Image (cartoon, rainbow, N blue to C red; front, side, top):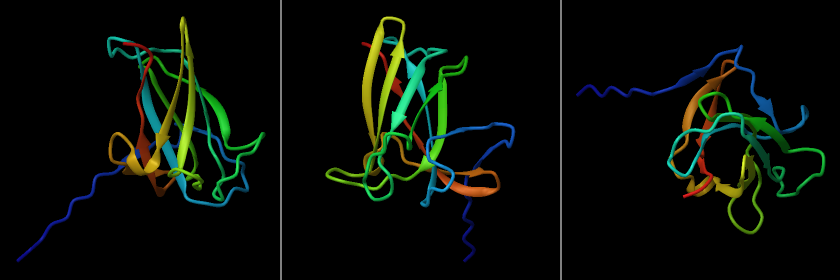
Length: 139
């Protein structure tokens, strides 16, 4: 019996530079977080500031690392790379604050119970885990 296993990978082009929330000397597993910011009707919203922050691999927060702001593109998509945070209390997670005209929203992505299963992508020639997390501004 022949079994064929097909893996699905997404390539992130080298020109597609992602903001990195972790410092250059950070140790840990690189991950990518990508999602969309949606309005109350489920339509993507462009030019939205998405502030994200998380703990280091030991579960500690830092004032000057593991945090940053990205802006959604014209399709309402944001993305960043970082390292997989360590856990304290609940499962490892990433906090988000989103600001758009007339809206401000906080949300948390718990990596162990992400809304969609993580997938493997290729970033700079290396396979990494990508988590997808959409945030709705209203409705």
